[in-house]
Image (cartoon, rainbow, N blue to C red):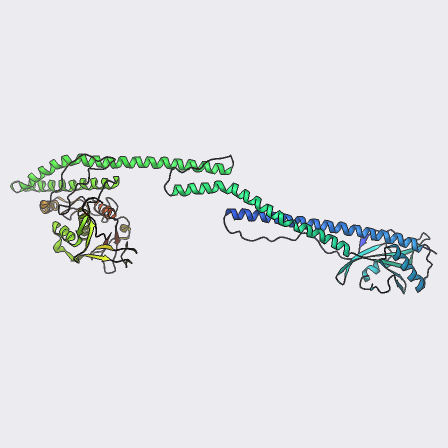
Length: 570
């Protein structure tokens, strides 16, 4: 019987295929830098991921197409060549005829290696070729089963090969296998090189793609971030106090809505600020005008009270007590009006220094002597400490600090004057770069409660909430004690812009100014506020130590030490 052409069974791969496809790209877990960097990195990562995915897909499709074409060609060529050669081949063969059969099949396949097997006989078209490692037992078993042509891709010594096997059947129509098996080995190195060349070409195209993506990202980031930077700049200007800062609104996107909202917010804030400033100016003018208008009737009341106090001894006891009370309260009201006018000058920015080089120790002694406090205070005043200050304003500060210590603290009250060199030491408010004058007023009383420390310089604040106004009996004693220093009653025109009359209080060597009473009794609640404003006017400050380790509180006046300067305003 003559063998017929190999059966046309289904083409199936009997060996495993290596998986091909895009690998998962693991990007950075965390972006750093500003918004521009984030946008650029995001664009580049998206472009890179897209390019890698496209490259992997292209490589997979190209490799599949090339291998599929090669497989189809190899299977068809082997089937046709075997059919042509087997038509004149007699079975059973001997070794020589089987070798000649393998050689004839190989010649028709372009000198591919062909292996023919029949029972125990094996013939190879190339006697020097090693075929055992390339034809697997799995493929032999599949071909021996006689279900049709089979193929398998294998790697042998690091090189790819395609092995196609087919059984030869008899031509009598029953399709029985003849026992003759033919295998053709095809070298796939050329196909591998083609797909790798394609992969290299695609991979080289990733670099320009990423570069273009980075350029587009920079352009997009500039378009997005430009209005954001302008909005940030306007916000910083608004925070710095420029309430007129605005942002140009362009377009109708979300950034334009944000800019429009910012402008509306800034406009509302500017309107509110202008309204508050106007109300504040009206309040300052009101206080100044009221204080000014009260000075004239208070001057008349003070004169009447003085006459009544001089004749109090000739009046009945009740009338005398009433006369002294009226005198004390009139003096207290006069001081309150003077304090209000002084505060209004600070608020209006009309307060000026009448500075000259002054011996601070003499100024402190004079202030205490004027009020009769010299015997009640322990002094530590080194001689020769001179500075350019306004003597009257320093007197106000000393009077308030010492008066508070005498009223609310406990003896001994100690006043210490010192010059602190550059470096500051442990004195609050003293920093590097110059000398400071430090005047400390300390007592041994209970100290200030914690909540009072932050409010001690507030206007009309009194740490002792239980204190009440002076009683009639106390006022009588106070009126007697204050006979040496009646309040000033000079009148003058109201200052412009809500201020009060020009600063015309007593100069160096004169009486006390506003905020510095002579009696050391109940104050107006403005003394400490005026003292702090006077310190700031000198470029200094007042620090508070509410509770000292040894007991009591300490107020420290810190002023810059200026030793040169002439008379007149600074």
